[in-house]
Image (tube, rainbow, N blue to C red; front, side):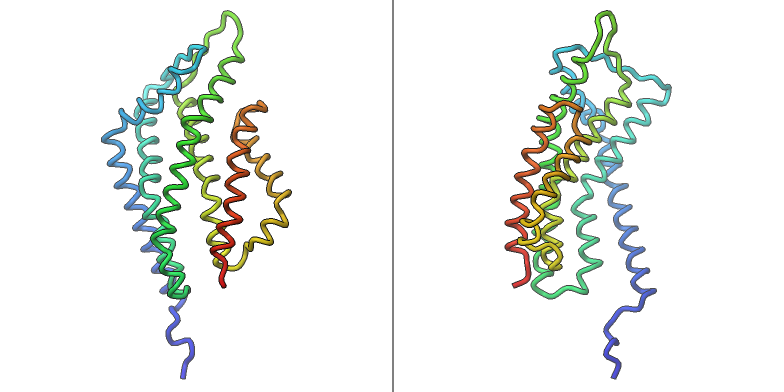
Length: 239
């Protein structure tokens, strides 16, 4: 009797992976098309922080095809965010055959919290981090020199901040998965807490402007998220 008769052959794994990737790409494309319909409203939303800056900022389009590329770039990014639940679900479906029944039951809560955590990171960046960053950089002006910025650079800058914060806020979800695999245990996370704080400060320094206020504002929530992740690992670890 072949004990491995229920195992999927390697080529079948590749075929399944290919179809999962195709479904993800179709989801991102559909989300991008939907976002393009409302792209003008999305751009207006992204320009709101400019109006709250004490020092005037003048945004300019410096290329003929500039706005066209901006609109499609924003649509693609928004399409990826909209498709995040689908992406998480496809990844989960690919690895779920090797999991136990109890582990499969957490699929939908995991997908939900993955999306919520990412949106929480984006919200934090939009309402707190971006205004502080813009205030800092525009205050570094010089008398007689106007703050004229390329809108491509501005949108790339705030998009980097929002996506970076969204990814960092996924830490509890990542710890949950690692704890279920018995890789990250609460004792392990507590033991390397000091090392994690150093990594958090380095990541905060990379994402935020080079001033101590922004560094502190970014570091505090990440430290809290790390402590929450320890609690998540405690409940997620196999009993």
